[in-house]
Length: 139
Image (tube, rainbow, N blue to C red; front, side, top):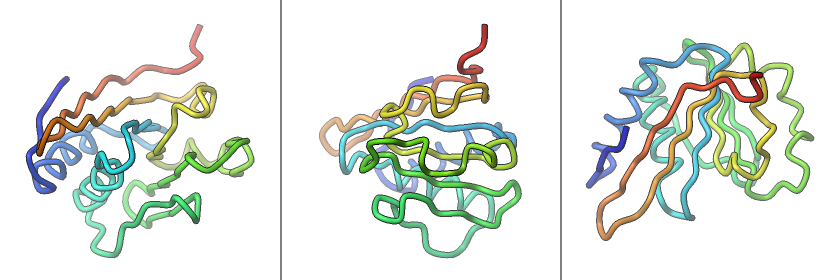
């Protein structure tokens, strides 16, 4: 599915459409250049789940966790050389996990139902491509 967003509110609506299809254990791999809107997309998904607090990029903290239903993990692999060191692998089945820069570790979501969200900047708009779900590493 390929959609266009011209503002943060449209991006939030697109994220809400996706979040309505997510189940605990799903991993959403977000890709796009710096400033494309990956964190904005996650913020929209969290708002759709009822989260009213702050939503910031986990670029420096590496992970943020949100008490929503289902529980959400928001990870950022941009600064990691060894992403498996995050220590969340055993909890991926309990949460919906959004992973910014998830393409840095293709095996991160192995065995989980995964969605791919690519955000591209086109002038003042964003082209958001959503693919999935697929079970990564399935034979």
